[in-house]
Amino acid sequence: MNPAFLLRRLLHGLISLVILSLIIFVCTHLLPGDAATAILGDNATPAALAALRARLGLDRPLPLQYVMWLVGVLRGDFGVSTTLNQPVGELIGLHFANSVTLAAITLTSAALIAVPLGVIAAVRRGRSLDATILAGSYIGISIPDFVIGPILIMLFAAPPLQLLPSSGYVAIQDSSLGWLAHIVLPAATLTMVLIAHLMRQTRSGMLDVLASDYIRTARLKGLPERMVLWRHALRNALTTSITVLALDFGYLMGSIVIVEEIFAYPGLGRLIVYAVANRDLPLVQGATLVIGAVYVGANLLADWAHGLLNPRVGRA
Amino acid sequence: MTEALEFAEAPARRPAVRGNAYLVVGAVLTLGAVLLALLGAIWTPYAPSAVDLLHRSTGPGAGHLLGTDEYGRDVLSRIMSGAWRSISLGFAAMMLAVAIGVPLALAGAYWRGRLDSVLMRFIDALLSIPSLIFALLIITGLGTGHGQAIVALGIAAAPRFVRVVRGAALDAASQDYVTAARARGEAALYIQYREILPNVWPPIVVEASIFAGFALMGGAALSYLGLGTQPPAADWGVMVREAQRYIFQSWWPLIAPATTISLAIVGFNLLGEGLRDRLQLGERHAGE
Image (cartoon, rainbow over all chains, first blue to last red; front, top):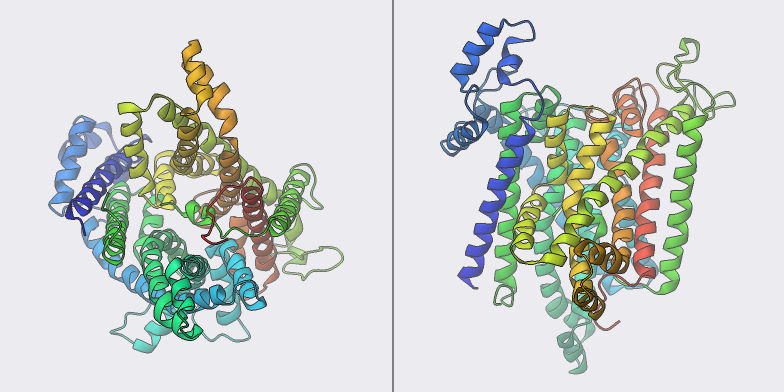
């Protein structure tokens, strides 16, 4: 594939990140009240506030503060959380792995369930099975994550079943069974959110493939239908699904924030909600920047995968 | 790409009959939700926040059609007053997104050049932030509350409107009637709003309808996270959050708002898709 295309995408990704960092900085400086007032509280004397501001660099002009923040971030220094008194980088590191685990489980299970269903729906186009699968995905898209989660809790964690814990987290080193029990419901919620969308996309991709000339050629030259589907159509439909899956990552990142909060799962999303609710500005800045970077990275990966699978992309 | 985009993704084109069915079901559900909201704004069977300790967690029955919650508050009354908050939030956020997005899109499509390319670069960057994260950032800047949630969701969705409307406006701006208007020496704003805008309303309407449902969901999600409407005021997100806390005691305070919000979102989505089919927008599949 064309390296200039990838390079251009990379450049666009970097510009996006710079603009994101600007937005983050502006948003965290809109309200009166800075890190110094957050640390010392409302009753602090003006002299103490001024001293702390000088120490934290908050007395300098905003553009300079922005540059200092960026330089710090590039060095891996995200500042110190004002409510937890811990380095932001450390907090993000602690929560990041949990979110990645949850996301990985979700993406895998969603792909394993949604792709076959989408293919079946496309092959059985217009039949009752297709209609059922489509209707199911429609309902799935319309039920919000913060509704699916509590309903799963109601079904599986509340009496009479009480099969699974309703919230919390156990490290896998402590108890692998406990870890599994705590991750089932969050992962199931996210999977249900994702399946609906992925299924529709796979169906639509497979329909495009089935309507293409080379499938008609394969049929015309007398290949058995099963061969046409499995050998010719499926391979191309799968490439669409892989790209969609990569793009769905962004969709997943919005949902993961909510799902982590539903199940009190200690990931990056819950950390962000905590930071926003408690106006912990350094924590908001660091955590949103990391999420944005992951998102931009995932989009780059999707572009790259798309280019690899479809050589026509990026030629122009 | 934003979450809203996922809902707006073009479905396979289906026969006009199905499109009409979507439109009808969507319109009925949407109208029902709007009527519930309007009624909830002026009248509810009980005061939505009235605590009745003698009738806590009573099941659905004659006195309380949808039962009462853990504090003895009437679930139906809370759903009705919550409908007003949730639906008006959806509409307000949608109008804000249109009000920001459409002028930018028209200006970009009309003037093109450097202004347009800088604008689009910025829009692309904004679109590459998950929109919930963007909304959370704005809430960090504005604080929590119902009004703040409207502003946050509206601003977070505006880039998407710029993208969609600009595409249509670019087409319109290259038409002969625009060239003619330019040649007549019409003012730039006259051309943008009197010549181009009337020809790009279909995508705006479709997008707005789908986004109203999305904003409704986003607003309830923010309330669920504790960052939108603040208790004791009720909206559907707050209700789900509180019901979850007492889920081991009773389930109807959860099921009632969960069903209502899902139906309302289905309504707005179907309405948008039905309109899209009716207005002949969206992708077509080869060979159909």
